[in-house]
Image 1 (tube, rainbow, N blue to C red):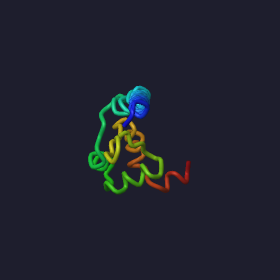
Image 2: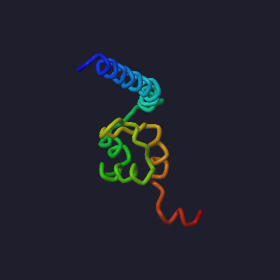
Image 3: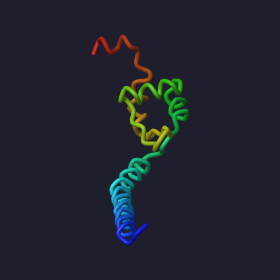
Image 4: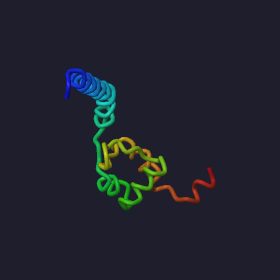
Length: 100
């Protein structure tokens, strides 16, 4: 490497470092907020038990947009407060929706 190449490598390295820092400054607080929302955070299995459904149903609800996954990466976590809306209708019979 010559002098100009060393300078270029240092410049690119610093640019990448600053870019990564910027992303973390912007994204990390959002990730933390998603995990710290009020109420307890439940795993997919805990959510399934609370709703009386299978863990696969919880995954389907997430894919359909009916529940929000607040986990990071492949970890599925659901805010317990979000499940409260589902439990309100748990004991309602399907025919009751027709009469509303």
